[in-house]
Length: 195
Image (cartoon, rainbow, N blue to C red; front, side, top):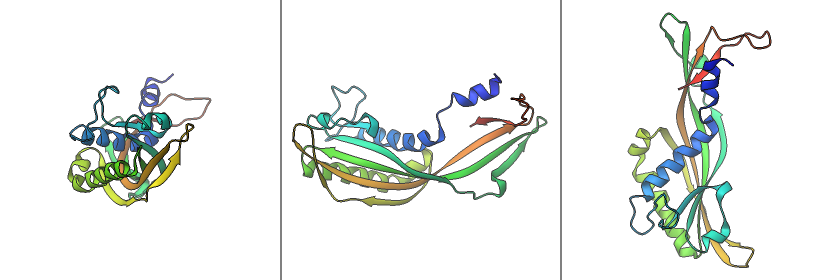
């Protein structure tokens, strides 16, 4: 297999990258809080921050959880052909575009007031630290919507609360096409390396 293509396949997917930007910011933000301090060790953390697929409603009975779920994504197509630059004598071409993404951040807790308090922290964090978000890979926060509290029942008929936040944002993605890629099944196509 072409080593340039293998290198590309080992890189985190673009769809995962959008959600990862949100998760990484939430962990950094709650890592600096006192009341809901996040640490890597699940025994010591006061709040769990996870992908929605790792969410366990039974765990919410012990600790509040912030869970993320990726929504729709689309390319902005802001540049003609998304072309950014030609690179040296190799003929490689660099491309770049903005991706518009949405992530729902679910704030789960045993009590409604706690879920509301966590949602307020998240809402405030994304509002107050927009300048920091730019340094973390976000291009722009386009919209943020705080939903109303929802009651949930677990298997044990325990009432839990969820306060959702819908976050719409954009981030930059760039990639390089190398014209001398290996032929695959008699189809010539440039190899892609994501940056």
